[in-house]
Length: 160
Image 1: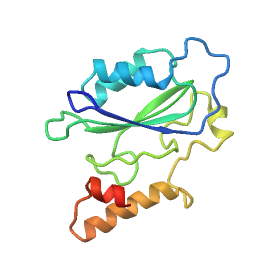
Image 2: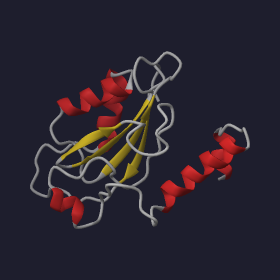
Image 3: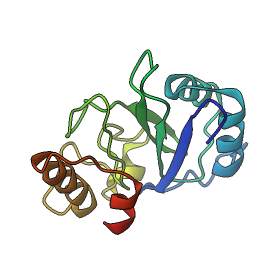
Image 4: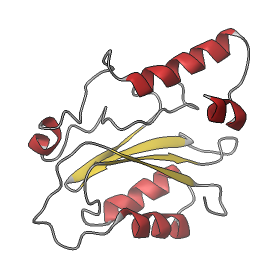
């Protein structure tokens, strides 16, 4: 988290790395640079796009900022691998709420700049599948909390 309230949360994802790539930048330095140089998810994505392929392998990053004064979506998921990536917004897939985004180890928007690297390990899904248990667990928690009129805070996430 930086002084602007920008948060980056890493999740590994399934993609075969580009073993012949050069100038790879490990995730730790790019996270540090992003937090140092940007303040919003959109600025962070533009910064990542300005870099060469930077990821060692598949990596999803939940990116969030303060939502009350956000001019755009306050959260994005960067779905990336060593070949490229996409920024997924919160209304692309359930819960389709501009203020709620769920991030797991699966690509839902990015099918791969090198599709074979992603498809060989089943890293991309065009929609939610029955065995996407992490995503379903989070969706169910959102639904249960909404039906009871409760919000989800840090304590609820730790308990869950």
